[in-house]
Image (cartoon, rainbow, N blue to C red):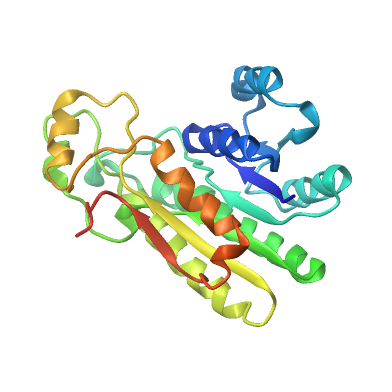
Length: 253
């Protein structure tokens, strides 16, 4: 049975991943920065799954010591680590402003928090997986790491597609390829999933505008992307390495 760490396991995508892996009898470590926000989710898990099947470990992806502690605590519980999935989404309080309102300081801080954190996760787990002799790293990017924003979708909305997001997610995709190529012959796979827009209480006008660029559904439900992460965990996907798998109902076509 595989032992999986899900970084950002208390978030929108993370919670769905946790439930899905537990349903399939995987052992899951829920790693998240905000323990308080995870309390309700963890209480629900306790009612639905045996407590030996999952553990919560607090982690800061911008801290080498915190990530090494995550690995050590996981090994104390489950003895080995088969894969780490990163769906964390760190950002500062000013994240998401219009392009011309973004300060240099905020841009750099958000790059450091998110992209820097993903780099550190990959680096720390790469060192561990080399020592272990095998491993699997799965990152999370976005359709907006692949194509330019479709700004008309955001007209008359109180939010936009942040410039920091585009820079971060495109870089995560290329870092995935870099690490995969670096690890040739090490029995360690590195891949990336790029979801399309995921429904999260968006209004009808936004949903309608977004769907114009899709083939069928438009905004996805979280469950629509989980199967891709799960496939990348399985041995059946052994030949998939250094790839960015887009799940977007045709949005990027």
